[in-house]
Image (cartoon, rainbow, N blue to C red; front, side, top):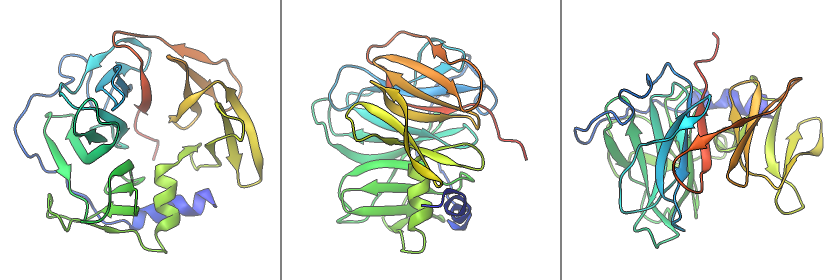
Length: 261
């Protein structure tokens, strides 16, 4: 896959409007300014189905709960502007299979479900286009995208076409740099993360690591056990993101500020 070309294709995905399905309270009110402050969202809890979603400032500290449900949430992905999050939701805390796809507006706390077509199968992951105006979902049957309004509607999504596939796969991948020059992949050896680029084969990123994410344009982060390491792509020291609060943090996504024009 050619990363730079694939990313440019994301701009062709139609606009997605996130409409509030019900009134609520901003989950991060008084904790951080959504869309301005740098922060991360992650899953925590001991349920095999996932757990609740939590937020933490980019410098670490106490985690703030975002969801308060009796089902498992997993695989969160923040929008490029840091104001919304897409995630998977299960039927219960004991069901390890995600059943539905949801979007939360972090400015007002409103949620709505993104309805996949009949026969799409359970969702596996979801991500935003580079401009934040569309969502791509991976399911057990293939790739789908949510584009133009009116949402929410059963026909608001459609299968990704062959021409759009490279862009859709790029949005779901952990791409590094801006423009992207590599992505994080699983190494052949279990429990090891590698970096793969257009110009060469995989090279080891970190042993005993999992759940990698791009940390802005110049760093990569990943979990080693329950701890988060943030590592510069160039020179510089790695640092640990200390999180206090919920058990078993994992599956993190980060907003580190709006990119430069």
